[in-house]
Structure formats: C-alpha cells, structure tokens
Amino acid sequence: MNQPFAGSNNPQARLLHGGQRGISLLELLIAMALGLTVLAGVLQMTSLITESNRSTLQATRLEQDLRTVMDILVQDIRRAGAFPAAAADLGQPARFIQDQPAPPMIDGEALRDGLSGSSISYGYRDSDGKLTSGRFSHDVKAGTVLMHTGTAAAPETITDPAFMHVSTLQIGSETVTVSSVGLVLSLPSVRVTLVGHLKSSPDIERRLDSRVTWRNPQAMP
Image (cartoon, rainbow, N blue to C red):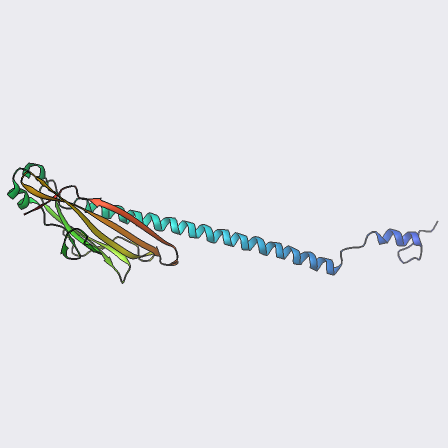
C-alpha cells in the first residue's frame, strides 16, 4: 500500500504536518525585545543598588574620618594648661602662676568667654616638666585641618584632601571663674565644630560637634 508523501493533497497528510509549524520571525523578534527589556531593567536596578551602596560606604567613611580628626583634636586640646606641679602649687599662688603654661589662644587672642575662631594654640608640660606647644588650624583654601605640635618644623595635615574637603573648623570658648586658696581660677572649655564633605560628591556632608574641658584650671594673676 502506497504512503502519502509531503506534497500530497491527502487531507490526513496536511493535518499531520500542520501540527509541526515552527516559531515565526515576528514571534522571535517580539520575544527578543521582551527579553532585552527585562534585561535592561535588571541592569538598571543593579546599577542603582551599586551606586547607592557606594554612596553609603563613602558617607560612612567620611563620618569615620571626621570622627578620627575630632578625637585627635579633643585628646590633645584637653591637655592644654596641664603641668605636673599643679596640685602642689595650689597653696602658693605666685608659684602656680609661674609654673603654669601660657594661656591658650584662639586666632591669636587670649582665651576669654565667647571668643571664637578657626585656630587654637596652647601649651602643656609633660610629666618631666618639659613644655610642649600645640596648635590646630584650618587651611580654608586646601580644605584641610593642620596640626602642629612639639618641635616639628612644619604643621602636619591630618585630613585627606583627596577624599574630603573640610569646610568648617570652628572653635568657641566658654569659661567659668572661681576663687580657690587665694587664686582666681578660670575653668575653660571649648566647643569644636567640624564640617566636611566628600571631594567627589559635595552634597554628601557631615557635621560633628564636641566639647573639651581643660584638665587643669588657668590661674589669673
């Protein structure tokens, strides 16, 4: 018995071959377009998440770097006016005044209540009695904080100018005066404000505030 061939007019043959029709070119193009649209959406979302994570990490590092600088400022400024013989000299006003380091200065002016500026100079004596001077200042043009201590010939930059720009270093003084054992003592403290932003993204900015109280009072002649 002869079998029907592909080109036959036999209805049964046409029915069998009709069920094996492939994907048309139009359907393939539509599928590709939908796939590319989904892929573009995924890539865009991935890019946004990556950018958000990068900004978060940079903001976190900015805050950490500013906090490190603030800690350096606070720890060193707190020693201003300290000297080993302070307790022993309290009963001897003239000797106390003679032994204590020079009063701190803000922007070159002697510390007083309400004084404000962008630099502070101070001195303290180590346990061996050696006088050490210190100074912090703000380089407005470079956007950095400078630290000058001891016998160093030049100040040291304690911020990274390639990563962040310090726009504000504000130091304001507050003093309380008391009398003790024939001495008029000033109990000084300063408020330190530090503001910085990312060099690459100025809109990412952080601000820190801290208060520093002297370990030793300042005797007023």
